[in-house]
Length: 237
Image 1 (cartoon, one colour):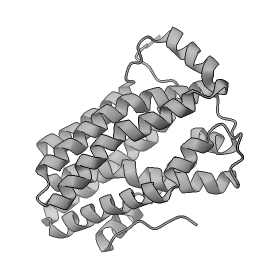
Image 2 (tube, one colour):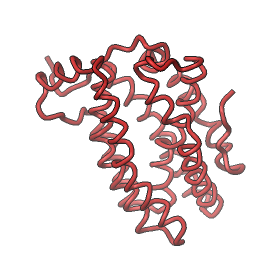
Image 3 (cartoon, one colour):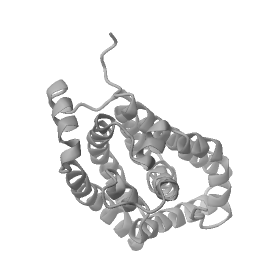
């Protein structure tokens, strides 16, 4: 049983719309192997490296939303989320990569690729979010960034349920616990509430566009984990 983060009829309908994508996300080998602790450390370290690059663009997208917001609470929320996207999650990344079990994987990837380069999927996702936040309406920009809150909060709970009681020596317990936490839940609820209001205020045409953008971002979330697992790069050989 997972948490229902919907803030009203619009976001409830939106979450229902993306259930096929969410189901495929839950079935990803990357996430299932993370839950049972069997995920290849190289794949996990690659994911963390890509996530670090993604967070830079994601924080910029939320900073743009802070500038567009028409209320002080919403502007403050996006500004604070932009600041914490890098500081808090990078801190968690550092703690995870300090684990001696991941040291060899870190060294292997650093030797193979210096410095870390955004994969085609990472670059595509970041470009999509920045374009939505910078060139489209506030509501459409919010729809773009929301899956990184909502899908992660959902997945965190699914993985913790799959893993059962997280043992202290579980290699990925820190990551799973971070997204199954009261703090992250609160941020997710705030973000979903903002989108619910924006959907309610939108014209039919804009509401349709917001729903499309949200769905596209959910697909990017699926691709992000899948391609990190596959060690996607730019080499065509």
